Each structure stands twice: as C-alpha cells, then as structure tokens.
Figure 1 (cartoon, rainbow, N blue to C red):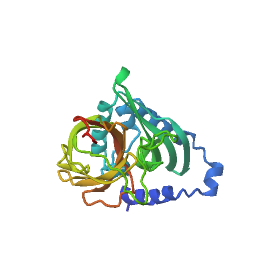
Figure 2: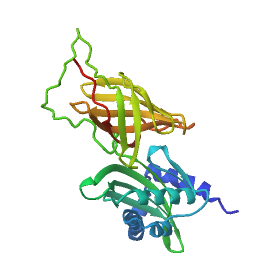
Figure 3: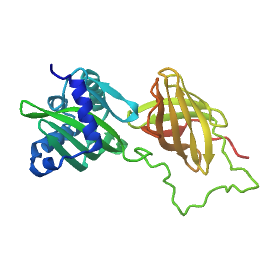
Length: 295
C-alpha cells in the first residue's frame, strides 16, 4: 500500500529540521539541480512571477507550510491567494540570498537558507522599503525529473523584525531622567493618531487617552500601553473582530508628534504557541491633534 503524502512529509520534515546529513550523501550526490530549483523559486518570487512559482511548488491538497506572523497554509489555493495579494500591494520585491545549503537522498531534498525579503512600496519620493531578515527550511521531491517544493517553514533571524526601534543617537541626552526619588516622566499620549502599517500599506486611526489606551479602527481593535521610558513606548493590542492579539514597541519623536516601531502576534485564534516577538509588521504613527501642553 502506498504511503500517504502527509506521512512522507512528516518524515522528511523531521529529517530536514534536524539538518541530518548522511555521510555518503555529501560525498557522492550532485545537488546542483536541487540548488538551482531553490534559487529559481526565490527568483520567481522576487520577479513576482506567480506561474513560475506555481510550476516549482507542489499543489497537493494536504501539503502544510508555515510563515511569519503565525500564518499557516494548507494546500495551494490559499497560498496562491496570499501571493497574488502581496504582488498587488508591492511596487517591487528583492530577495537576496546570503546563505543556502542543500542536501538530498534519492528523490527527496531539503535545504536551509538565510535571505532578506525586501518589500518596496510606492514610487519616487514616496517610496518605502521594509526588510524582513528571514531564515527558512524546506523539503522538495523530484517528480518526473523536476525538483518540486513540498513544504517550507520560515521565521525571522532577529526578534524585532523589519525596523530597529531604538534609532536614537547614543550621545543624545534624555529630556528627563528618572531617579530613585522621582518616577519616570510619561507624556500625555491622548489624542487622535493616524497609523500606517508599512508592509501592507494599510491606514487606520486610534483614539487614545492620556495613558495611551484606547480603540482603533481595525477589527474592533484596542491598544493598551504598559510601559513608557525615555520615548520608548510599549504595550499590547487586541482585535476582537478577528480574534487576535499581540504586542507593540514604538519610539516616540522628541516633539511627540510621530512614533515608529514594530508590532507582533502573541495569539491568533486558538493558536498560542507563536514564538515571542514573532514579526507582525512595522508601524508609523502620526498625531492628528496637537500634543497637549505640558505647562
């Protein structure tokens, strides 16, 4: 009786994730065709070539893959839908590979790879770039002489994601200093804020109170500020409309009119085993109302 694709995939993923390389394989196997297939798939992605990606990926209904932000794909249809949406959002993509290693045994191959996923949004003076430093593993199968990607798993190489939060000059003196006798100075964060989600180019608004808590116009969302120290603004978010929650970290400008930073997931529905600070996206906040007077 033929072993199911799912059972084979579990076995191969176990081999691949452990990076076990049989001694005989490394010595005798020519993996140039396997490496070429992996690089061709990355190139097709960078060129926004969906038919090219489709030819190099398995369409089996039970194939399962994972990417950042807690997302999971089963089969080809939902992955194809998200790829189309991504290609429509970005002006261009660049996926330079910094490290790629491949192994094979018979008609099964696997790889480990490090690359940057560079999303380019807008044109001309309005162009923005967001770099996601990724680490990826995957399993391929040779079908009719062609290597086809079965399943892949990717994560971020760092914890903070696409944008470093603390970009303050190290020599800059803080505006206020907390001592054992005085609490840290927390600004009044109240007002209307326009929030741009850089990766998806989505914009929505938040209405915050003095402590930095309040609703925002995305899936019945709500921000809760948990800590503020020397312009580093941290907190959590909850979206009851799509049953997700996570955290955020921002750097507030000195004039209190803008903040930049990252957000991440801690739960998506019933899924709670998301790695700490798994990337969700990058934020640019702009204050629509003047900062309250400190006098």
